[in-house]
Structures are given as structure tokens and as C-alpha cells.
Image (cartoon, rainbow, N blue to C red; front, side, top):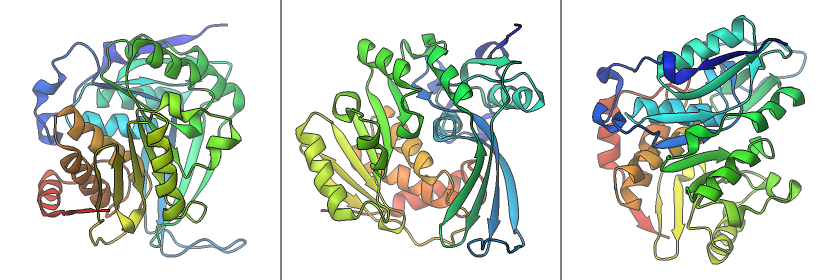
Length: 330
């Protein structure tokens, strides 16, 4: 069986400085500042006015192509913020879509290795997003593709300052997370609404340095706050609760505060949680305070919802909103 291996590093081209919020010298390190671990597939998003009804048609307002899932969204966002970023991911098919994904990763300048394998089919995802903030997904993501994540080249992790992972990719990301643990690299773990934590039997307390959880119908804020305090008592360093209009609540052993979300014109909330994570990590890596790091994450994630797709918003808008956000004790 022939397998085509594409090293993103060898073919990469960096974004021009006009697309970067931070200075390009942040890329000077030989190793990625953050390595993101997770599933990869091409995707497209459509925005509509209201939730879809079964057996009914609806007109879409706008559409965009992007790379999914959260790990590559975080990687692309951090790259646009000026950081050198790595990616550990699954194989793709040796087909047109797989080639297009490799080409886009090279354009973004993300470090890592992608294997194009003729024995599998490149996964694909379609997202429908409406003005209420609701989304629905249609995807083809086969088990044999996800399993290839366990065979990924992990060398890009070695000297990273942080690792990002998402619970949706468990247990396929387990070998990479174990490598990070062995190397003593802190892990930013997005646990979504905690629904999968008990289901998959994941000991997040031993894996997560920073945990991000999301308030949903399945996870009310009171339960989330209690879980955050329990997680801190069991070894997690920081827990952040994100909740759309609620903003973000930050918990650590010596600091608890909230940053409210600003009023926005919602177009597409797809990827907002991942973009928040990239903003927070960027602030942390710049030695911003926790408050400033959360504000920066809230600013870029909020503004990202005012347009379609996962590319970062205008630099001037981000900086203006960032300066205007306030924090409060919780």
C-alpha cells in the first residue's frame, strides 16, 4: 500500500504580517508555542435565519469553507495571532479533498505531518448555523480514520509550551496527551459540556492543566461552578466556564472573576469556543494577566460570531473591544 506523507513544515508559507495581530518575531522559536491535537476534516458552513425544519427547505444567507474540528481552528487562530503552531491529527484520503487540506495547512504555516492514505476517504463536515446561536452538523467521520490519530507523528509536541486538546477526540488523542504528560507539557483541555467525561471514563483531573467547559441546557451554570471548584481541589490548575452571552467565568485557587460577553450582531457562532481558547492561550504566552488573557479571548471570539467562518476578525476591532471589556468578581 502506498502512503503519501506530507510534512507541513517543509512546504509551509507564513501569513503576511498584515494578517497578524502580534509581531512575527514570536515565530522565531524552532518549536511550536502550542501543539493542537485533534481530528481534521474540510468543512463548509451555511448561515440561515432560523432553525431548520425536517422536510422543509430554507434559503441560506452566506457560506464559507473552513478546516474543522476545534484543534485545527485553534491552530489556525494562534497562527494568525503570530505564533508558531503544531498539529497532531488523523490521516486523510489520498484524494482531491485531502490534497486541498494539505495545501491550506501549508498556506497557514502550521507545523506537523499529514499522511494521505489511499485506503481511506477524507472525512467531510457541513455546518448549518442560525441567528439564535444554534447549529447542526452533518458529517462523515469514520472510525478507521479517527483511529489513525493514534499512529500520528508526535515529534512536534516535544518542545511545545502548551498542548490543546478536545474531549470529542478522546480516546484517539490519548497517545499524544500521554506524550505531553510524560514531557511535563501543560494541557489546555476543552471538555465541552462535560457530557462525555463520565461516559468515556476520562480522568481529566490528571490530564488537564487548564479546563474549558461550556454552559448548555445539559450543564447549568450552578453545576458548572461546583464542578470547577471540585476540579481545582483535585489538581486542575484553571477552569474556565464559557456560556455565549454569559461570557466567561474563570476559577483558580487564588482568583475567581467573570468577563461578560459584549452585545454583538450574531451571524455564526461556529468555532467560537475554540477561538476563545486561542485568544486566552495567546494572552497567557505573552505573559498577560489571567484577566487580560480572558478579555482577549472574549474579544476575538465575540467578534468572530459577527461574521461567517472561523478566520479572525479585523485587528482594530479586536483591540478596541479588548480595551473596553470589564471584569467582575464572582
